Length: 355
Length: 274
Ligand SMILES: Nc1ncnc2c1ncn2[C@@H]1O[C@H](COP(=O)(O)OP(=O)(O)OP(=O)(O)O)[C@@H](O)[C@H]1O
Ligand SMILES: [Mg+2]
Image (cartoon, rainbow over all chains, first blue to last red; front, side, top):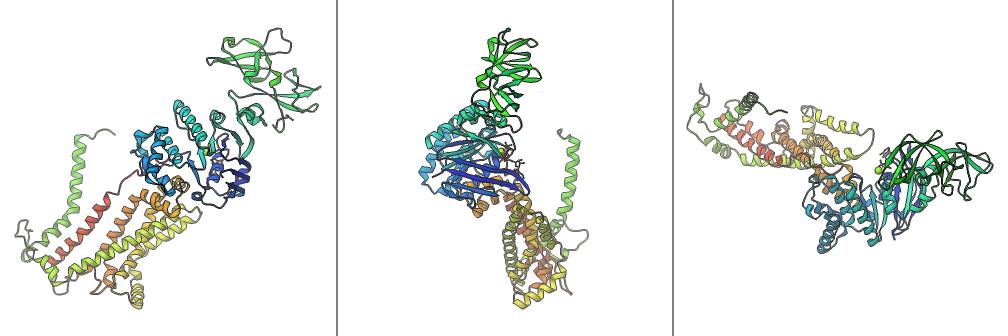
């Protein structure tokens, strides 16, 4: 029993409200990622689950039990802190032992768990060192190890990979995923890195300014963003946005009209925002009547693909094209949007117009 | 910084030597006078070479129960130090961790007790201890010294506790430890240098204190500092015994400071948080 439920959870610091009524259900064994820009309340939410911050309003339960007033030590969660929080007067081994001691396990079990965890995280040669004698990345792995040895029911991670180099980050990310599959632990994982979110999550929770913008699988948040914020936050390079208006049942922007995919509900004259992913902007033939004029400002070569920074009317847009099709900067080309892949949002509210 | 030149080095060492001589001179006088035969004690110019005698030390322990007075001093000083460091740490921890806009006023109020002129309260203390029957007991001195030592410890330890990141305590609480255990196993060990500093200050103050010890003790609980002064009477000042007693009084303080010194290390919390 380790499902986590947040019901209208609010956090206030004095008069300042930083988390506004979060509703969220994390099923047992689920890997949920809290994703959002800096300062949006991810850490605060995680700390409320851990019991390190009081819940100002609402209800928080773990395993069916309301834990609003339960001390952290009684919640059965393990946490990896954003700033490590290693015990500086203990060696790496002692740090792990310390985390295990309240569980009152047999010495042989403790030793085996520590050895296994050290092996997984590549900490074996560092076991007798103190935190001050470790690099940033090594400390981060110790922080992970200290949480992992406990094999808790609920795992809380606060940006555990932020200080690792690219190679180690991929490796540890993979280890976290594997660990989750093996142990079936419920995980709440905070990050502002969307690659981590997309690769690890069963479910992504996208937060902004203390509000939950959207909850969904990685596919859902990528393919069906509910707001312009989610649309531009997920996906790299970010989705292009153009202002437009509904005229005669078609969406008109920059003097070009597009057919509206059937999944959208619009009304005549409505101001809308049109979103198009860079990969859905195609280079068109010069005589294509439904295409737009685009001036190529910058070309970025990425290997398989190239990014074209385009100026279309008064909009800056990015197109992702096969590297072979890339164009010299300064030229004007014709581009066509893949109409089936258009996203439509209400220009006022930023909410999707999908049915 | 550049490597100091030879001239700088000479300057620095000369200065250090002068300071050392100034500070060590009284100690030299104590030591030499304590083993000097009485007749040549005040010879001018002072004799630097003289027959060493132990008679002052022998007198000290045979004419008076000086060993007992030393014991009293130890009981009082160690007792007050232990009690003050314990209570002071708890108070300091509370002040360090409680988030309240008036908490600094509380801290200052506690420290202000230390600023009280001791002599103003000697008589009230005398009356109180006489009433409750604690006159001439080590406990009376332990209580009095603790009222001065606890505020000092609170102030010293608050600074050290402030340096221990709260994230460590949070980590321990998530790991399954309660408040007391977290304090005992994480916070206090990381504030160990503060404990050492506080203990040194408390011990030295209690060990050297004279006024309260003189007023509140008689023959039973008399401390070494008071005992030494009893060799000073209106008709004769027994300098040899005073010096011998003074030298013995110096020793425990030095031992205590040296013992505590190994805890005075910096950077204990290095590497704990980003
Ligand atoms: N103790 C506090 N008192 C007042 N405001 C706070 C406190 N802690 C956090 N906040 C505010 O709450 C908001 C959310 O902070 P939080 O640490 O949860 O952000 P985050 O999403 O984890 O950001 P990051 O990605 O930078 O770690 C921020 O605006 C922050 O300034
Ligand atoms: Mg954070």
